[in-house]
Length: 381
Ligand code: SF4
Image 1: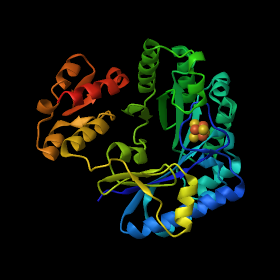
Image 2: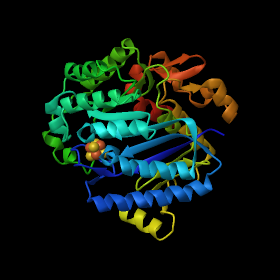
Image 3: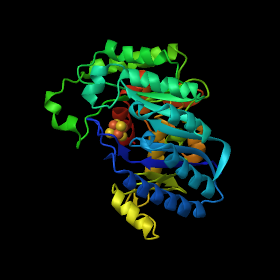
């Protein structure tokens, strides 16, 4: 049985960024955070009893802004995890950190309490962009955070950047990429800005001057080329890693491996089922304080049909550069990939999909329009 992943949601931020629609709350009073951590620990204990035989090989503190917590608070959660689950010796333990919240004490303590991977949310090397995005930090803050983490001995650092920002040109974005590469992080994630409902950007969308599709394409392709030259392997649409430094935790999402989510809005995929918890910290805390499990929301009203399961498998695998191995697909589902997904051949002919090592995978230009291609391929079976 493959290792289990644990995702711990920390839904607090210093302030809401202008583009963000994740479930997170403005910074709460200290007591509020303590109450939430106690609920998390109760939940971890509850789930640990059910899955005590499983080995946990990844723990991911995501948010929100997990680095907002004090070291004692993170340690309390980690202690609860160690108490209730069996962690493998080389368990990947990641924390997401916002440069505006890291201190020397935190960086040093992360290492000593077992955190071995830090994912820094930078987004842009331009202070003007950072201000416009509503981030709480500057590029100098990022540099200082990186230095603190490296000096503390954290040798697995990921940096998040965003492209297609208002008024951004390809050369601006590539400058961010180059400035990040100067630090030589082990991993880089690059996301395209999407204007989501319930964000400040959505309210002012008509006033934002966003790069058109051609410019976005240029940004993405230049990013892929640049990072390849710098020794990063693109292993997923938005993720690039030095050899051996893929995110083991995030791979579980794309390979449909088992993971348990803790906290409001956290998702789980376990023993063939998928569910999440509602986006309400009050409901979450009340349930646990009353000795009950938080209410689960099933991700589908009815279990997936066999056809839906096959399509889901293809959709998730094609997010990865390794793609869909044809032989494995045929052995798993007892059908031929080529005869089921007939439109695939057309995209292969036009250079959006390629076949390598017996697997179909998107090329970089295919990744850029992968949503469109996937819906076309999957609709035409
Ligand atoms: S710090 Fe992250 S989670 Fe918090 S508001 Fe900004 S983007 Fe959203």
